[in-house]
Amino acid sequence: MTTTSTLPGPDTITRVTLDNGITILVYENHTSQSVVIDGTVRAGSLYESPAKNGLAALTARSLMRGTTQRDFNAIFAGLENIGADLGINGGVHRAGFSGKALAEDLPVLIELLGDVLRNPSFPEEQVERLKGEIFTGLQYRQQDTRYRANRAFREGLYPASHPLHYSTSGTLETVPMLTVDDIKQFHQTHYGPADMIIVIVGDVQTDAAIDVVHNHLGDWKNPNQADVPDIPEAPQATQIQKTVIGLPGKTQSDIMLGVVGPSRTAEDYLAAALANSVLGVFGMMGRIGQEVREKQGLAYYAYSRVDGGLTPGPWYVSAGVDPNDVDKAIDSILHEIRRMVTEPVSAEDLSDNQSYFIGHLPLQLENNDGVADALLRIETYNLGLDYLIQYRDTVERLTVDDLLAAAQHYLNPDAYVSAVAGPED
Image 1 (tube, helix red, strand yellow):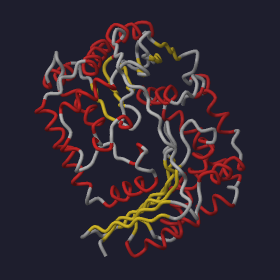
Image 2: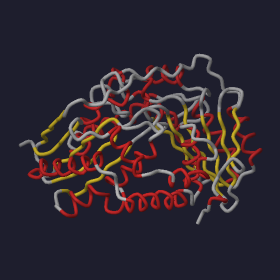
Image 3: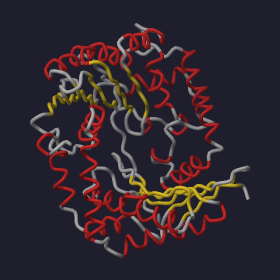
Image 4: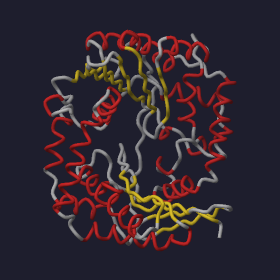
């Protein structure tokens, strides 16, 4: 098991920023012959307009469909020849990329990453195929009660001026209207080295890994790369707001209920995450799983989650129930939320969940993928290179009063947004 002395930290993580704005983090792990890359580019869906919802994600997925130097087949044949993986997807704030290869093939992987990021050709046939895949997926999801409840919840929780109001995938109305010219314009405006992050973890020499990135991406420039836009605040609900969606032929109802929670950089984020673990994660999905699902038998699944990111994400409860039990399940969920904001958790609950958080960290860092993911989060949220080393002490310092204060800061059983999708009747 990983101990504090062997956790990645300032002495073992190298962090450098190239002149063009790319930040590189390298962590050597010579127990594995592979290497993992993980990173982001400042090109998420917050840069698209509502009328072109889905453009950022479509652009990200189109990057590997062809470049000025390689067609689709050449890109994937090049990966297969060395047994490597590389993928790019769009998110809200950033487009993310990840890849894996033998350590000796890191130069090939980085060269290919640089090519698809800098020189995509966006062949129309490939783009139209991607649009078809996305459109078909969206059509399928229209009959998925869980998806529909989730979308209605987020649209109710965030105003139309906020990027979290929208799906990164787009809609049935917007996706067909996106064009290759739209994609090219988005790429030209938003893809560039400014604030790009690339994490490299594996059987590498740090200086050599940095040189590889510098050789293939160090001369990348985009003087027209757009600045990060201001994101409006999402106001907390002041009353109960409910949405009900009827879908014919369904036999299950899905519930989403919650509020705007903390951002990942909020001072009380970790306290909120620990409180949420008590509420709907630890053991059999916390108190909600124990009461709503196990004791009362009202739900097929029931849990809670805090989705804090660069902006305040939702703190929500999700449950799948018999349509006849929707009201009972919601009442039971609200009962547990009310307990969280009126009663301190027990010392035993606090201790159990602290142990869970502390014990789970080494499991997350058992392989290169987990370490790369952790380092990417550290850089994205400016947590500090000693974050993993200090993590145990940070968690152990939290008190029952900290958890109560965080719950009271965000949760409110009398003011929330809910959405239920289920049978039409």
